[in-house]
Image 1 (cartoon, rainbow, N blue to C red):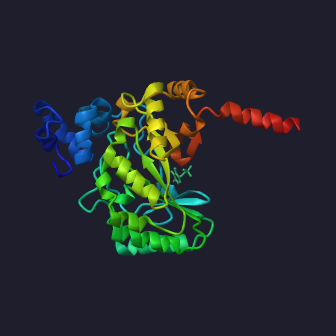
Image 2: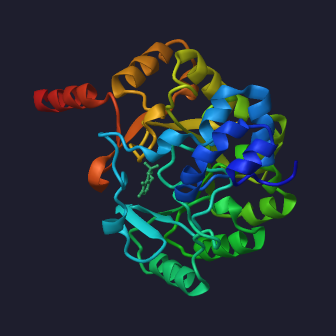
Image 3: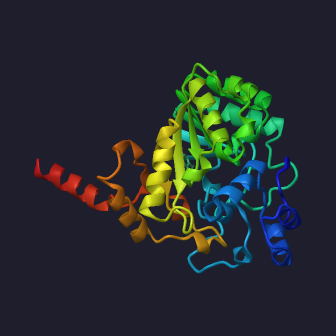
Length: 331
Ligand SMILES: *Cc1c(COP(=O)(O)O)cnc(C)c1O
């Protein structure tokens, strides 16, 4: 199989869902994009539930639970210009396109994006690049989307070259699912586009140790060889990685592939994602279970996106902040 699967009937033909399941999934497909790459279809066959659950649609995605929010990250007030999100003083997001190689069923960005994939026009991209050039307080650009590694190497290379020519952008960062979900995109041409003088950090999204296939390993080796610093981000997900053993396996797999676990995200409460929800108290207990057992290198920061655009906060740190405050008062 060589094509990304995008409809319930293609999932049936590939043997990934039962024919009886397809009719109920047509309404899900009308609202939320489906994409299962050949690599991930093969991995669903090999590794089963923890991978299948992330990518195969389910009818309950059309139900919104009471705790879920239409717009969990509330980026709009922080959007100075189309394609840019500037929430923190020293860094800003640039979203050149909204399409992804796979659509994770727990992602608030799985909303159908249309045939152009939400690609910025040339004029919109120019305006966004001009905004970065004119905003010296911003010292880091974070390319996200969508997935920036879905761009052609030529287009991505041009964007990176423009950004790297802005002196106050000290570091560049890309967040991507491509190295595990569609590792074939990490071609020599892509590696050439990513080879920069300016430090380039790549934060790879992976949620289960099985995602580190031989093909993913080759892609990561190439990215490391091109001089990128590799970080890992994961989402804590029911039925995927919600045990201390699964998290330990995931973080150790990252380290074996030169990926430093950076963030473990509490799931954003996007509509129709209740089947993935793990309560914060349970997440904290899992993280406590790992502490002391696994190398500190394997430790991400467990974070949550706060409602109404208030940004990410580390979970389980309230007590630590209190102690630091007391220590200061005592001096
Ligand atoms: C997550 C995020 C960042 C990056 O935050 P770090 O803590 O530096 O990884 C930047 N901008 C926005 C809007 C974000 O949501």
